[in-house]
Length: 302
Image (tube, rainbow, N blue to C red):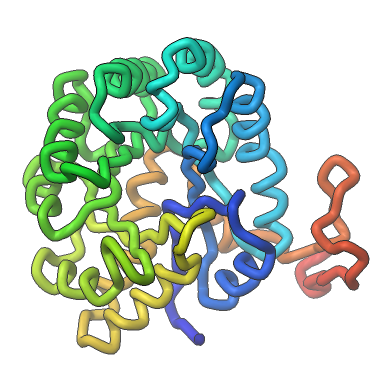
């Protein structure tokens, strides 16, 4: 699939994806991704597993992405599901500040509510205070159940803690929540799934109805049924359905760059002025190639 557009996927869990996905994404025009820290499908039992996971998001995964020409950023936080393990959550909260200043960490996230329990509320608020203390962006996970009430509550809590809505991305929106998010001044992100929740057909209609300001398209591709090409596919469908190129570029590239660029760590020059791919490089003596011939963009390598 050929695209004139550059694409940013600002919510994709590449730890769960393969190198084939990176190759396909780069071919489809993806130049940068943001990987939120999240629940891995099985509850973690000790703080060391969080530490190793966060370390991979600021170390190995950016290297792996670079080997296929994609710039990798991440958000670091205690996810809402595992906030319900209070003893472990307390230890994770002590760990978080060690990672928030890493070069590719552009926000605290994804944080928020799952079942909207008192513990989820406690640790959501604590992480919002961290964001205030360190002047950081926030990426909010809205609950998949009782979504409208959970989304409104998430925004009310952000405002209660004095966060600037323009520096908060409310994710997992749908037609029922988008107006509330936009009216309150927050950024509205949509996770596009292949068969359930928000699909790209519905996303096209959202942009037709609400426009492109502060609306962001992402894939949330992870270990479940999901599509790492959801953003370029949605961009292509938008164009086919008559949405202006400017609006497609905003929702699939420019808006994400504008918001997360406020971190000071995500910059267009990172992929516009890079040195090309050199798969001879290693990370802690490790390669992604498994003996294959390395790709080297010779014209860019000095």
